[in-house]
Image 1: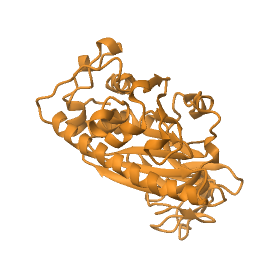
Image 2: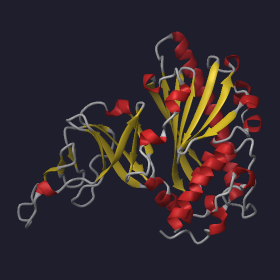
Image 3: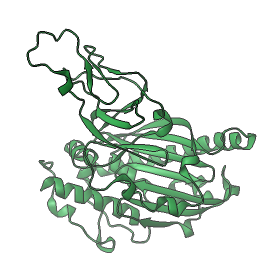
Image 4: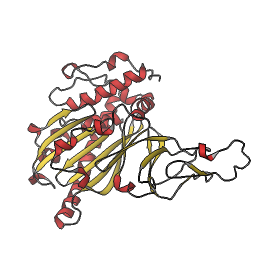
Length: 361
């Protein structure tokens, strides 16, 4: 894989946090880095695709993209969840356009049909094609794994299994059990910034007093801590229930490389997925889950949570879009990191640098 012309190898050498600088500005602003990120990072790692409720019955399927490539996940008649490229073996038409349920997968271009396990079932008007054997035609598969009610996929087998990569999360958040949360709603935001700038912002509480006045009251900045594991990082803070919609307890913020957030507060779980759109654009997908969606107290909390979360997100969008302008200004090269407050940023950027080094050879 060819690295972008602006890539400078010495900018991507691994350094300890106490000596480290940020990724260089060009990695956020150069249009060539969009494709480089898709190929070197997104095509090689697990990606959150869906919650398991959407894929519980035979024929249930969801469509998505990973690294710009169309995929489909489907529950088979045998109960097995499988993933395929959403690409017909005839002339590359799509097998499904939207999420849904079907007894078979039928190409929306010429009508070739496939069993739920990906085997071609019928290809009409192909009788005159020599040596054409439908038993030899099968959709190209991708990796799929389920974890705590969430469904992930990868275009090829990642170096680490999903279970191994997420090891330790269940134990840390006990007695909370993620599988007991139920899906409530979806929201998305289009942000005028590089996906890495959005992730950087998520990975530190350093900006809380300056960007999030409401959230800063809710969390204890003095007790805000960050920890890392090989495939994820974890931010934690005690939670003051008198300052927001949640009960007293703990705020758990997990970042799962390369672009997923798992935010757990009392009675509420939220997943975020940061999807690269262009060098200076990303889309952030939010799914909300709750343990109680019936009681009057829960309905009040949910309404307040959705409103408060939107307020925090608007604040994050505002600062990320301004940071993107700074990164693209030509005046910014790289900056030093705070060892006390930016451990998560360093962890993420080291993973990105390692991916760049591997891809650039």
